[in-house]
Structure formats: structure tokens, C-alpha cells
Length: 176
Image 1 (cartoon, helix red, strand yellow):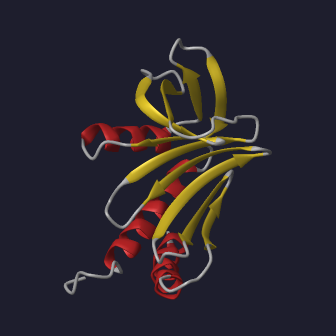
Image 2: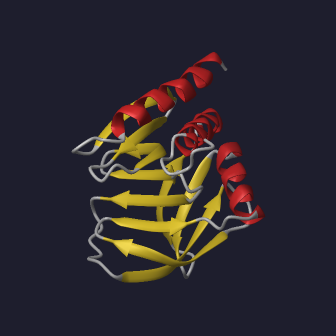
């Protein structure tokens, strides 16, 4: 638990230094089993936090942003979607009821999907934190890719702390 607390403090310090950065920068805040949590800053001054599980050429990431948005990203070097396309996909965690990702954005080598800002989004993240394996599937249910969730619980806790730190450092709100 001490490690997670330090990651929140580190996120706040890194965010303050990244806000004026000219190029994309990231710093790893927490690593556990197959997962890594980082704070990322872009050249336009925006920041985000990401929890990611990777395998060679593949990754599953959960992004959080200062406005509270949560985005899923599935990445593979084997995919080439171009830009401007969408697809309806499915995600299943272990043997639980599958989730539908309706209208997921297909962008280059990634599938991107914003979670709803409601109970369903929270339930999805909770399933990821408690799960062992996540299966990405085509609309017809056929397997596309799967990812280990070993270490996801602690990593999602670190992601939440990072997200709270970047939300607290968002410029334009004098009350933060």
C-alpha cells in the first residue's frame, strides 16, 4: 500500500513538470506482475495516466484523463485499420457475461473505446481488477486477442491515484 501512495505523490510531481513539456514524456509510477502504470504528458500540455499490460507487439491499456474520461485501448502491430472506422466488438473477462463495445474506434493499430461515466463503467473496471484474463472478440464472438490480468487489482488502484492527482492539477480551476 505504501508503494501506491508514493505513486500518487509522484504523479502529482510529474504532472507539474510535464504540463509545459514540448514532446511526449512518460514516467512509470508503478509496476506489478504483468502491469505497468505511467503518467504521460503530450506536447500540447495535456496529461493522462495509463495502466497497461503488454506482450510482444500487443497491449491492453486503460487510460484516465483529467476530465474523468476513461478509455480502453487494445493495440497490436498485426492490425492496420487506417483512420475513421468503427466496429462493434465484445470483451469477456474470465467466464463472466460478455460486454459489448458498440462503436469502438479503429485507429491505425488500435481499438479505442471510452467507458460510460456511470455504474456500467465502474462495473467493467471492477471486473478487470478482479479478473484473470480478458478476451477481445469480434462482434460474432470469435476470439481476436486475450490479455493476462495478473496484477490488475493493484495496478488499477495505482491508476485511480494517478487519475486523482492529474485531475487535481488541471489548470483553469482555481479551487483545485
